[in-house]
Image (tube, rainbow, N blue to C red):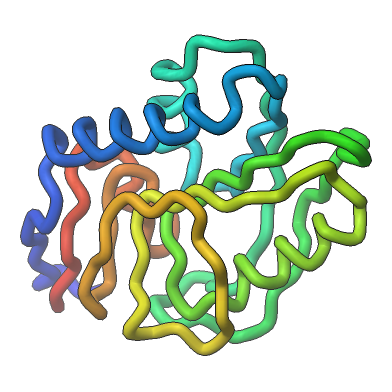
Length: 175
C-alpha cells in the first residue's frame, strides 16, 4: 500500500451503532428462547460481534472460526482455507454466523456448507455489510445491516494487510 492512500468515511460510527441495534433487535426476536451459538468469523467480525452481543439480553454462547482467502492484498485469492476450525459440537444447536462483510460469497458459502454438515438445528447468517455487486457465489443473508458499494473497505474490523481494523468508522481505501 502506498503512502498516498486516502481514507474516506463511508459509514460513521453512529450509523454502525444504529445498524447493530437494529440487527440485535431482529436476532433477539428470533433467538431469545433458543440459547443460540453465535459463531464469529475471525478476524474481521470481532468488533461487530462484540457490539452485537452487548445488545443481546438472553443466554447464548460464542465461538470463533478463522478462514482465509485474502492473504495480504486487496484481492481475494478465491481459495478459502480453514485456519481455525470449530471446536464445539453444534449438532442440534441453533447457530448464527456473524460476519463483517459478505463480498464474493466464497468464504461465507464455504463456511455455511461446512457448518451444515455438522447438523445444527438451524443455521442463519447475520452480516453487518453486504457487497452484492461482487457476489460470485449465492449466499442467503438472514440479517443484513448495510448494503455497500464495490469499494475496498477498511475499519471497524475490516483490514488491508492487517492494518486499519481499529478505525471506528467504515472507510473506503483509495490509493
